Length: 142
Image 1: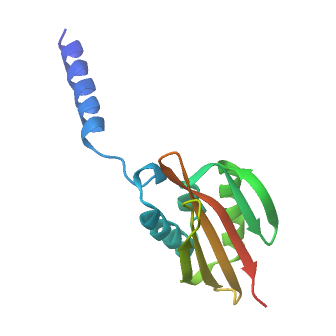
Image 2: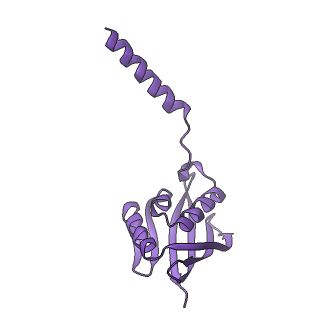
Image 3: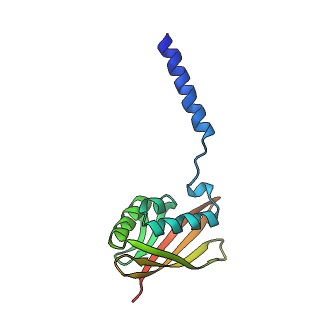
């Protein structure tokens, strides 16, 4: 009997904790400006995992060794491989703006510890009421 009372209390505490603690950080909770900031930091850190959090079901990737539309999990793997070969040193946003359909683009420059420089481009789209990272592109600058 005592065990059942304890289990009920534990379950109640877990349910209350889930209701009280807000889960923030996924694209559903972010404005376009916040998402731009989060994605920029993820690029700066070379974190494929953090970038993948903001993808929709699919993402368009245009990287030196991979081009196309990939699932969220495939996109994370491809970005992880890119960042493992190109360790970020400095990431700078050069330009950003709004497109006619409500999407927001960001153009930047990624300098790597390996001495390479990439022009970066990413696009954030609004799908229903949610902003998602839709397109990521890194072009090697010669």
